[in-house]
Length: 85
Image (cartoon, rainbow, N blue to C red; front, side):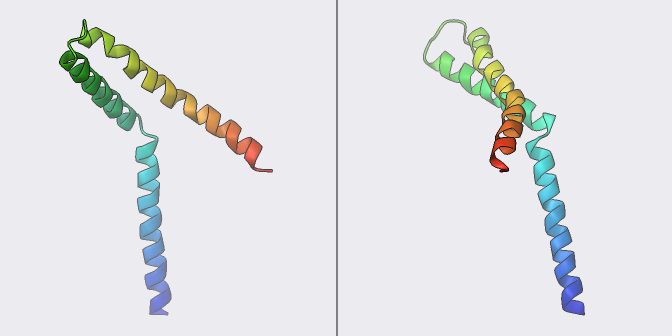
């Protein structure tokens, strides 16, 4: 019986980790952090490439990222609907 209890505890622990990973993947905090890192990376690139107004021009790709993350759940739902058959 001890073996079964140990297995159940391991499964519950794994499930908890999977739930936390999923929560992180869909969290607003993750999206904000990635948006900020995207913006800073593009500003650095634009500045290094000596492109005009890097702080302003880096906003466009960052907004593109945010819009893509907002639209992905919609497309995921549609994709799942048509692939459930």
